[in-house]
View (cartoon, rainbow, N blue to C red):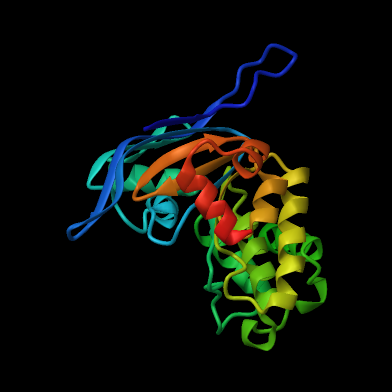
Length: 260
Protein backbone atom coordinates (compact mmCIF):
# COMPACT_ATOMS: atom_id res chain seq x y z
CA UNK A 1 0.00 0.00 0.00
CA UNK A 2 1.29 3.45 -0.88
CA UNK A 3 0.82 6.06 1.83
CA UNK A 4 1.24 9.76 1.16
CA UNK A 5 1.27 12.19 4.09
CA UNK A 6 1.52 15.41 2.13
CA UNK A 7 0.19 18.56 3.72
CA UNK A 8 -1.71 21.10 1.65
CA UNK A 9 0.41 23.73 -0.13
CA UNK A 10 0.72 26.98 1.79
CA UNK A 11 -1.32 29.98 0.70
CA UNK A 12 1.85 31.56 -0.66
CA UNK A 13 1.88 28.92 -3.37
CA UNK A 14 4.92 27.06 -2.06
CA UNK A 15 4.76 23.32 -2.49
CA UNK A 16 5.40 20.86 0.34
CA UNK A 17 8.85 19.32 0.40
CA UNK A 18 9.12 15.56 0.71
CA UNK A 19 11.58 14.67 3.45
CA UNK A 20 11.21 10.90 3.90
CA UNK A 21 10.38 8.24 1.32
CA UNK A 22 10.21 4.49 1.71
CA UNK A 23 9.62 2.54 -1.50
CA UNK A 24 8.78 -1.16 -1.57
CA UNK A 25 10.33 -1.67 1.87
CA UNK A 26 10.15 -5.22 3.17
CA UNK A 27 11.67 -6.43 6.41
CA UNK A 28 11.68 -10.01 7.62
CA UNK A 29 12.84 -11.64 10.82
CA UNK A 30 13.14 -15.29 9.94
CA UNK A 31 9.79 -16.39 8.54
CA UNK A 32 8.03 -13.37 10.00
CA UNK A 33 7.45 -10.48 7.55
CA UNK A 34 7.12 -7.38 9.72
CA UNK A 35 6.97 -4.90 6.81
CA UNK A 36 5.48 -5.99 3.53
CA UNK A 37 6.35 -3.84 0.49
CA UNK A 38 5.70 -0.56 2.29
CA UNK A 39 5.54 2.71 0.33
CA UNK A 40 5.52 5.77 2.58
CA UNK A 41 6.11 9.47 1.97
CA UNK A 42 6.33 12.17 4.64
CA UNK A 43 6.67 15.90 3.98
CA UNK A 44 8.92 18.22 5.95
CA UNK A 45 7.31 19.60 9.08
CA UNK A 46 4.66 16.90 9.33
CA UNK A 47 3.80 15.10 12.55
CA UNK A 48 2.89 11.52 11.66
CA UNK A 49 1.82 8.96 14.26
CA UNK A 50 1.94 5.22 13.69
CA UNK A 51 -0.61 3.19 15.64
CA UNK A 52 -1.54 -0.47 15.66
CA UNK A 53 -1.07 -3.67 17.66
CA UNK A 54 2.32 -4.79 18.92
CA UNK A 55 4.32 -6.56 16.22
CA UNK A 56 2.60 -4.76 13.34
CA UNK A 57 5.82 -3.13 12.07
CA UNK A 58 5.63 0.38 13.55
CA UNK A 59 8.87 0.41 15.52
CA UNK A 60 10.66 -1.40 12.71
CA UNK A 61 10.17 1.68 10.52
CA UNK A 62 11.91 3.84 13.12
CA UNK A 63 14.74 1.32 13.47
CA UNK A 64 15.26 1.29 9.70
CA UNK A 65 15.44 5.08 9.60
CA UNK A 66 17.97 4.99 12.45
CA UNK A 67 19.94 2.32 10.53
CA UNK A 68 19.63 0.01 13.53
CA UNK A 69 18.29 -2.51 11.03
CA UNK A 70 18.38 -2.85 7.25
CA UNK A 71 15.48 -3.64 4.94
CA UNK A 72 15.55 -6.87 2.99
CA UNK A 73 14.06 -5.12 -0.03
CA UNK A 74 13.26 -1.57 -1.10
CA UNK A 75 14.83 1.88 -0.77
CA UNK A 76 14.81 4.60 1.89
CA UNK A 77 15.52 8.25 1.09
CA UNK A 78 15.83 11.18 3.51
CA UNK A 79 16.00 14.79 2.32
CA UNK A 80 16.73 13.65 -1.22
CA UNK A 81 19.66 11.44 -0.20
CA UNK A 82 19.61 7.67 -0.26
CA UNK A 83 19.82 6.09 3.19
CA UNK A 84 19.49 2.53 1.93
CA UNK A 85 21.06 1.13 -0.10
CA UNK A 86 23.98 3.56 0.06
CA UNK A 87 27.73 3.66 0.82
CA UNK A 88 28.54 3.75 4.53
CA UNK A 89 29.91 7.28 4.37
CA UNK A 90 26.66 8.56 2.86
CA UNK A 91 24.64 6.62 5.44
CA UNK A 92 26.53 8.40 8.23
CA UNK A 93 25.86 11.81 6.67
CA UNK A 94 22.16 11.16 6.21
CA UNK A 95 21.86 9.79 9.74
CA UNK A 96 22.93 13.18 11.10
CA UNK A 97 19.55 14.50 9.99
CA UNK A 98 17.68 12.05 12.23
CA UNK A 99 17.27 11.95 16.01
CA UNK A 100 15.49 9.32 18.05
CA UNK A 101 14.08 9.09 21.55
CA UNK A 102 13.87 5.50 22.77
CA UNK A 103 11.64 3.75 25.27
CA UNK A 104 14.49 3.08 27.69
CA UNK A 105 16.25 6.49 27.59
CA UNK A 106 19.67 4.98 26.57
CA UNK A 107 21.64 7.69 28.37
CA UNK A 108 25.33 7.26 29.16
CA UNK A 109 25.29 6.51 32.91
CA UNK A 110 28.96 7.41 33.43
CA UNK A 111 28.56 10.90 31.95
CA UNK A 112 26.95 13.97 33.44
CA UNK A 113 23.66 15.18 32.01
CA UNK A 114 25.48 18.03 30.26
CA UNK A 115 28.02 15.72 28.66
CA UNK A 116 25.24 13.38 27.51
CA UNK A 117 24.03 16.33 25.44
CA UNK A 118 27.41 17.56 24.18
CA UNK A 119 29.22 14.34 23.31
CA UNK A 120 27.62 13.70 19.91
CA UNK A 121 27.49 17.33 18.71
CA UNK A 122 31.22 17.65 19.39
CA UNK A 123 32.26 14.28 17.99
CA UNK A 124 29.78 13.93 15.12
CA UNK A 125 28.88 17.49 14.12
CA UNK A 126 32.27 18.99 14.93
CA UNK A 127 30.92 21.71 17.21
CA UNK A 128 33.29 23.38 19.63
CA UNK A 129 32.88 22.41 23.26
CA UNK A 130 31.67 25.92 24.15
CA UNK A 131 29.09 25.95 21.36
CA UNK A 132 27.85 22.48 22.26
CA UNK A 133 27.56 23.37 25.94
CA UNK A 134 25.68 26.59 25.22
CA UNK A 135 23.21 24.67 23.08
CA UNK A 136 22.91 21.94 25.71
CA UNK A 137 22.15 24.43 28.49
CA UNK A 138 19.43 26.04 26.35
CA UNK A 139 17.84 22.65 25.77
CA UNK A 140 18.03 21.64 29.41
CA UNK A 141 16.28 24.87 30.25
CA UNK A 142 13.65 24.04 27.62
CA UNK A 143 12.93 20.66 29.20
CA UNK A 144 12.93 22.07 32.73
CA UNK A 145 16.24 20.57 33.89
CA UNK A 146 18.60 23.55 33.85
CA UNK A 147 19.71 22.69 37.41
CA UNK A 148 20.70 19.11 36.53
CA UNK A 149 23.72 19.78 34.29
CA UNK A 150 26.20 18.11 36.62
CA UNK A 151 23.96 15.24 37.76
CA UNK A 152 24.45 11.68 36.59
CA UNK A 153 21.42 10.10 34.86
CA UNK A 154 21.14 7.45 37.58
CA UNK A 155 20.32 10.22 40.09
CA UNK A 156 17.30 11.34 38.06
CA UNK A 157 13.75 10.06 37.99
CA UNK A 158 12.48 8.21 34.93
CA UNK A 159 10.60 11.28 33.73
CA UNK A 160 13.70 13.44 34.13
CA UNK A 161 15.83 10.90 32.26
CA UNK A 162 13.37 10.89 29.37
CA UNK A 163 13.47 14.70 29.27
CA UNK A 164 17.26 14.51 29.07
CA UNK A 165 16.92 11.97 26.24
CA UNK A 166 14.61 14.34 24.35
CA UNK A 167 17.05 17.23 24.85
CA UNK A 168 19.94 15.01 23.70
CA UNK A 169 18.10 14.16 20.48
CA UNK A 170 17.38 17.85 19.84
CA UNK A 171 21.01 18.77 20.50
CA UNK A 172 21.90 17.24 17.14
CA UNK A 173 19.52 19.67 15.44
CA UNK A 174 17.78 16.91 13.51
CA UNK A 175 15.36 17.46 10.68
CA UNK A 176 13.49 14.34 11.75
CA UNK A 177 12.65 13.29 15.31
CA UNK A 178 11.63 9.67 15.87
CA UNK A 179 9.67 8.88 19.04
CA UNK A 180 9.37 5.23 20.02
CA UNK A 181 6.83 4.69 22.82
CA UNK A 182 8.65 7.32 24.83
CA UNK A 183 6.35 7.02 27.86
CA UNK A 184 6.05 3.24 28.05
CA UNK A 185 8.83 2.87 30.65
CA UNK A 186 7.54 5.69 32.86
CA UNK A 187 5.40 5.53 35.97
CA UNK A 188 1.88 6.78 35.17
CA UNK A 189 2.27 10.02 37.12
CA UNK A 190 5.30 10.98 34.99
CA UNK A 191 3.67 10.42 31.60
CA UNK A 192 1.71 13.68 31.38
CA UNK A 193 4.78 15.88 31.88
CA UNK A 194 6.76 14.21 29.10
CA UNK A 195 3.81 14.31 26.71
CA UNK A 196 3.22 17.99 27.45
CA UNK A 197 6.88 18.70 26.63
CA UNK A 198 6.57 16.89 23.31
CA UNK A 199 3.37 18.78 22.52
CA UNK A 200 5.23 22.05 23.09
CA UNK A 201 8.08 20.92 20.80
CA UNK A 202 5.61 19.86 18.11
CA UNK A 203 3.82 23.20 18.23
CA UNK A 204 6.88 25.45 18.48
CA UNK A 205 9.32 23.88 16.01
CA UNK A 206 9.31 22.77 12.39
CA UNK A 207 10.87 19.38 13.16
CA UNK A 208 9.31 16.48 11.28
CA UNK A 209 8.08 13.86 13.74
CA UNK A 210 7.38 10.17 13.35
CA UNK A 211 5.83 8.85 16.52
CA UNK A 212 4.95 5.34 17.66
CA UNK A 213 2.64 5.48 20.66
CA UNK A 214 -0.29 3.88 22.44
CA UNK A 215 -1.16 7.25 23.98
CA UNK A 216 -4.13 7.99 21.73
CA UNK A 217 -4.91 11.39 23.26
CA UNK A 218 -1.36 12.49 22.52
CA UNK A 219 -1.60 11.12 18.97
CA UNK A 220 -4.84 13.02 18.43
CA UNK A 221 -3.31 16.27 19.72
CA UNK A 222 -0.02 16.41 17.81
CA UNK A 223 -0.66 14.51 14.58
CA UNK A 224 -1.27 15.84 11.12
CA UNK A 225 -1.68 12.26 9.92
CA UNK A 226 -2.29 8.92 11.63
CA UNK A 227 -1.34 5.59 10.04
CA UNK A 228 -2.98 2.40 11.26
CA UNK A 229 -0.71 -0.64 10.91
CA UNK A 230 -1.66 -4.29 10.96
CA UNK A 231 0.46 -7.29 9.94
CA UNK A 232 3.19 -5.19 8.33
CA UNK A 233 0.93 -3.02 6.24
CA UNK A 234 -0.85 0.32 6.53
CA UNK A 235 -4.55 -0.53 6.42
CA UNK A 236 -5.88 2.99 6.94
CA UNK A 237 -4.55 6.53 6.98
CA UNK A 238 -6.07 9.91 7.61
CA UNK A 239 -6.18 12.97 9.87
CA UNK A 240 -6.66 12.19 13.57
CA UNK A 241 -10.27 13.34 13.64
CA UNK A 242 -11.05 10.77 10.93
CA UNK A 243 -9.06 7.84 12.33
CA UNK A 244 -10.24 8.33 15.91
CA UNK A 245 -13.73 9.60 15.15
CA UNK A 246 -14.92 7.74 12.07
CA UNK A 247 -12.47 5.06 10.87
CA UNK A 248 -13.38 3.14 7.72
CA UNK A 249 -11.77 -0.21 8.50
CA UNK A 250 -13.26 -2.64 11.00
CA UNK A 251 -9.77 -3.57 12.22
CA UNK A 252 -9.10 0.11 12.98
CA UNK A 253 -12.37 0.41 14.87
CA UNK A 254 -11.51 -2.69 16.90
CA UNK A 255 -8.07 -1.35 17.80
CA UNK A 256 -9.28 2.14 18.71
CA UNK A 257 -12.04 0.67 20.89
CA UNK A 258 -9.51 -1.52 22.69
CA UNK A 259 -7.04 1.24 23.51
CA UNK A 260 -9.32 4.19 24.28
